[in-house]
Image 1 (cartoon, rainbow, N blue to C red):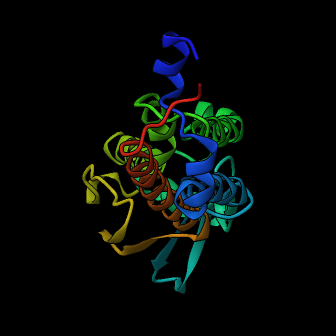
Image 2: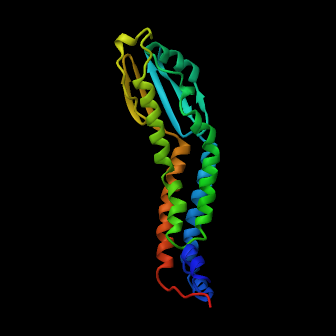
Image 3: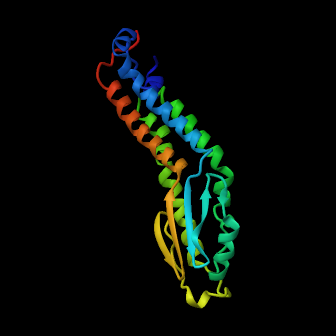
Length: 216
């Protein structure tokens, strides 16, 4: 194996040694492949759920956010938000929603590629997927803050509601309204994928450090 290729793909273990420690060398691939599968499954599930409670809706209005669209009682929540001058929910993260599915598929493919890499390059391929849940929440919080801090000054209840920053997770209160935001199944799966990624990278590093018998 050339030095350049070995630098990228990392050291290779002799077949007889690998066969004797098969589980040790399969675990990283299982972890990373499992993470890729969880990310793909998460595309079909909601990532975030927010329930808004108002005097006229004591049981709450629930909005769910998938990776590329909104669901639930979006129109009714938008009507209530108009009173305090908040923009329609559909106006948030338009670019992110357009590229989200393709981006997650690319992250899953990078994880599959990282299975064959036994060098620090594996971390560079896998870390974007590992940080994806954090990126989703950070982007969500950005748009919530953007909408909450830029209220329409001509809204009916503008004088009674000051600009605010809604919470991406947890309970919030805005005038007579209250909200409860929680992670949904898709985000939970992506977090589980992150755990598998870190476990896979650790196991991969552990299996490639000792006993570096090269191909002849």
